[in-house]
Image (cartoon, rainbow, N blue to C red; front, side):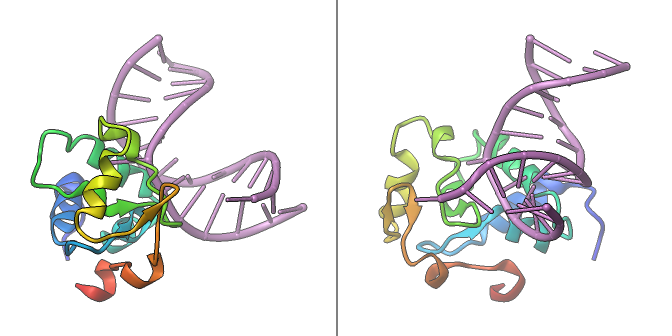
Length: 109
DNA sequence: CCCGTGACGGGGG
DNA sequence: CCCCCCGCCACGG
C-alpha cells in the first residue's frame, strides 16, 4: 500500500465506511492506516472535518467506548443522540455492548 | 523558539 | 473507576 501522503483523507475514507449502528476507535483507525501510535492525529483529523457532514464522526469513540469527542458536536448530547438514532445504546457517555458492535477496519473491512 | 494541550493508547510502577 | 510517563504531531500562546 501507499504511505500516508494524505493521512487526513485516509481517515475520512475509513470513517465513511463505518456501518450505521456500529462504532470503532481512534486507535483502530490509526492502526489500520499504519500509524498505530498516532491515534491522536485521527482525532485531529475528525476535528478538521467539522464542515463535512458526510463524515459520521459520531461512530468513532475511544478504546473504552467512551464518547470522548461529544463536546465537539455543539449540543450537549448531540453525539449521543446521533448514535441512538442509529440504534446504538449509550449510557453515561459510554457505548453499551461496545465489544459487540465494535467495527475494526483491519478485520471487518 | 519553547511549551502546554489534545476527539488516544500503551506500558511501567 | 490506580497513578504516572512516554510517543505521536499539529497548533496556538
